[in-house]
Length: 141
Image (cartoon, rainbow, N blue to C red; front, side, top):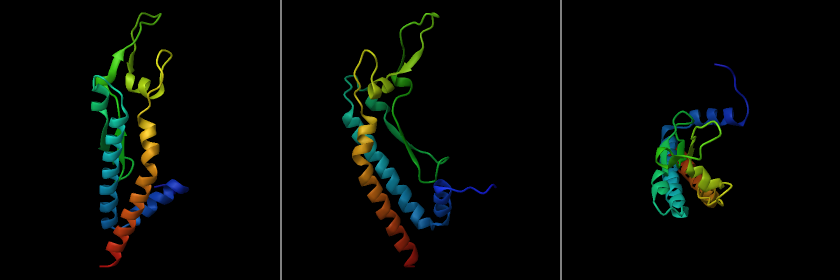
């Protein structure tokens, strides 16, 4: 295994060195944060059909970190063909992106990043508290 340096490598080494109690607390707190973020995003969506709001979800991302969560929106339910191109094909486009960033014909109606910006400080504080409680729990035994 090659030696890695930098802040990301240091964070990985620190996470590996933490006791299981801390991992458990951080994982559950991060899942709760992700669930809250999903609900906030759904509240920001102005979708008359409800398709876009139904695609907002969270899932574990163990390939990134044991505590990582992935929040996503869009997918097959919000993908549709757009105007035919000069080549004659009709490319598919996920209108969750159009909602978030806008298009030539439609103003942006962001829901993803505003919800993240609204909640990130609270999430960071909760994760810090969960880590501290986990460490206290692990060292008090």
